[in-house]
Length: 372
Length: 219
Image 1 (cartoon, rainbow over the protein chains, first blue to last red):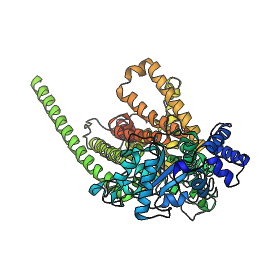
Image 2 (image 1 turned 135 degrees about the vertical axis):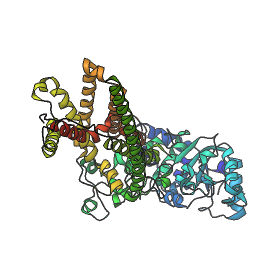
Image 3 (image 1 turned 180 degrees about the vertical axis):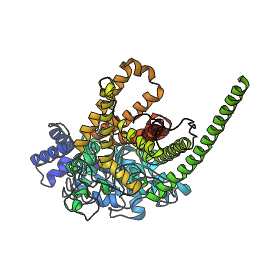
Image 4 (image 1 turned 180 degrees about the horizontal axis):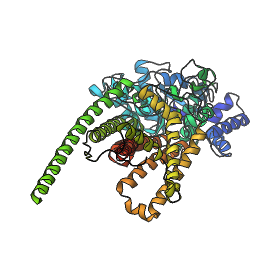
């Protein structure tokens, strides 16, 4: 992979590939529109990007399943080829790069040194800290040490996926590797969380593009997610929302309601509490999203979504017990136990009252006898 | 653990246990109390007295004609918000899903727009009964903390439910968490305050009606 300072600007790169200025402005206008930026921002973005050097991006994968990278390489707009060949200089990604072993580690160290303070650090996966970080190590170094080292010289950190953003599966109870999200380990750098399991590819590339074109971290929500993509719930934008409003629900995956495309709330849809762009940006180049395929939203872009009980129990359903599932038997245990204690207290209270009543009656009778 | 998980998890479990414990405690405690013996000659037979008690249970559901003008409006307000509460609690789909997972039984839901209309009406009627309570001199003097807190906790559940449905006041999951938490608080308060009338109202009417009917009072 080429050195950052030896590279031409993004505009020069595009010209070499035969991309006209007009086409590029069109593309940037579309991207600005997707990012909900003002109308003139597309032109400004185009000018800024054309003049910019391709920023160095270092992509580190820790305790993860590679699903996020699988998602990223399926980005349609911009495509992954456009992104890594025209817009950014992807200096390290141990899954995508041709180099391996010591060569790859050297490339990472060199990119970090040459672009100190300027590179964008992309993290995929949570960071295990148990057993001195031994649960995840690359080239003999623990993930937590690599993260701390790489974060020092980063201009910003983009956490791709729920694992790096919120801990994800490894962080789920009982968290055997003591895995943590990046924000619990690095606190002195701007961090953007692009959560999702995996995140939508266009949301990853859009967030990167916005940062590269403006040089600023986008507006973030309380979980440091870009508001432009995580500003609405799935439920707000769901095409099945009218059925929710009409009280029409699928009760099982093969009933009439499911065949009619009714709301999946009762089948456990977490859309009402999940902020993401699935219902608008969709997947596979805007083809569809899980609810469109008949499956309820799992709430995968929200913190701790693995620990929130069954994916298939309704959002309003109570949850306690072993698997967070409440069966009528569990309810009977709680109700029965409480009722037994209540009955005992009731008997005791009534007994005390009767004793007191008898005592009052006796003293009243004695007083009357004395008076007569 | 986030607010929603806490509200529908451990908080709900504890609230449900306290509710059952309190309700059974109070019902058993009252049921086993000794009824004072009546040494008078009964005016009606026991069967007739029981029939009188049953009649009184229904006939006391509306004020006697002599008092209709004075208290009819207040009673109508009470009926209004009680009916509204029943509809909102029992016919809203997420509530049905809640009961379904607790008891394993579900039933058809009403459209959300209908539920929203009933919720707003119920809230309005709750405001009206509070206004009546604080402006009616006698009612105000009869009222204590129990009356106001029972009103507050009931209204809080309705208000947070409306806020969650309308997506106002904060992130949906926070408002939903507050809604479920306010319901948990209602469950805890229920057996120890005047909300317990839900269990007492008909048995107390029946028992009083039977005892008075035995003494010859009209039912």
